[in-house]
Image 1: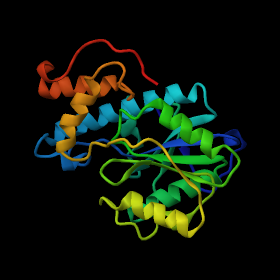
Image 2 (image 1 turned 90 degrees about the vertical axis):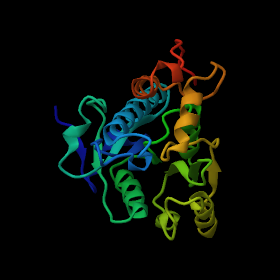
Image 3 (image 1 turned 120 degrees about the vertical axis):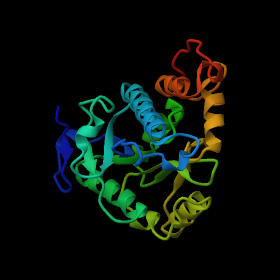
Length: 257
């Protein structure tokens, strides 16, 4: 199976009026993904969890896209390893290669490349937050397709963000940011203010990129049905496999919006 690879600069009318819900992802290989979760997890376990995160994220986005003018996309790296997503990312999800050296450049180029491809708006989504509720993604799409030049940010409680969205290319939004620090969201707010870009904020959530976040994740997906997060069944199964059933509830849950 070969994925469709979108080429920067190639415009397609099929994307007109749509928001690209774009997951920023590395091909999930042991020793190359979720490395900050070691030594709590082995490289193989970290890759297993990353695969589960991706599966849950795309299943959540699929649900969102059933009722919204949006489609899921993968912005991936490294080049030439696209087939590493086989069995993880649905085969009809298009891929676009990440360009640029710094993380900020990769975000900016992904946004500008997808807008140039014909999308009306782009959300850039991390691959570390499998329990973000569907309602947050729906709100992002609604805002970006409202006809107003604006941005959307979903802040993480560690000071970063799990989503950044635009409907026009704004290079400044990604410049002079101290990536992977607790100041990312605040600096992004500052950049938006500099360019007079309204920045609408989604509910604060959390990502899993450090060992201390694993316990919170286990509590989140084992919690009561009234909790607002996406239930992340693949992540639940991966955590049971890694830590044992005693750490994770195995009760059946319905999809939460």
